[in-house]
View 1 (tube, rainbow, N blue to C red):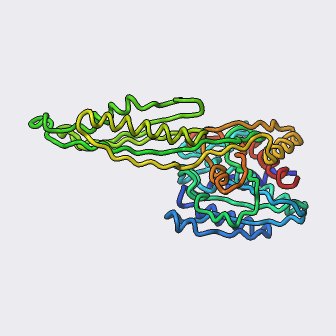
View 2 (view 1 turned 90 degrees about the horizontal axis):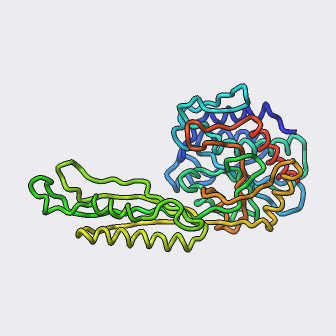
View 3 (view 1 turned 135 degrees about the horizontal axis):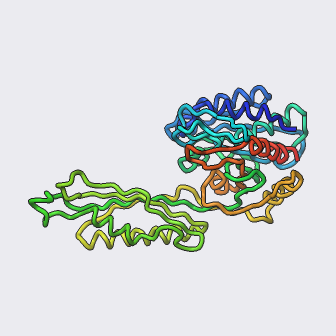
Length: 369
């Protein structure tokens, strides 16, 4: 029943609108107008004011005439950079790409389009359905700042389907890790590298030794870590008095995240003390882990609907974070549904006509059943 031409037109229109994190205004206005044409009133919250952005999260409650528990559908409106001047290029083989200078934005406009098509089919065919809650968020790409600031007293749903995953429609991530970000600043002593070489305390050397000892990669079962940025120094003839490293730790076990950051701090302290330097550190958990087992109603319903559609219904863990992490902290059981986006966060990002259509079929089926 999905309308392929409408899906592709909507996707093309949304891609053409700039929507970087903290400035999703154009996409938000487009969606509000689209929903209004369906007779759905969407309310924008004040999250933009809280996070220093131009736009708030968009929420709607759609009563479908069936007295059952409501169900939440969600996607995010922001895209990563480079995103200004995006355009959707349709190829003969059914692939959709950008022009190669920007991301495509199928992360997560493919999810937005699928949900909008599902709602459109419900309305134009007068399909009775359980109540549906819609939450389209801002600032997801910088660790879910939009969903973190939403007022969850509004939400009545206990189950959520977050359309924001790469891979083939009909698959979903049912667990995701805690993500901790840290920054360690090594403080040494500046001195002229030629005239006073023995009077300086070399902050970069301390940081470099620490980096060689900080575990990176797959460091434990279900745990990854990385040092992603190192910066310091002012000139080649000055012994650097400051050097900063930034990294992250991800784990499906929140306790392991805490123990591993303590290990990183101890390594950094030891490397600094070895040459008389000091450290300052800060860290924060950006999103917390969630796990929605296969025996939950949320997953069983997803698998049943996928089976009816001839889709796989496969669930798996992901090392990426999403708004589902935030929802779980507010008692909302969710999974992250694949929408056919590929090579996300890169200028060779792509999706396909078939994937957009199948993601829309899945959204509609989850809503109407």
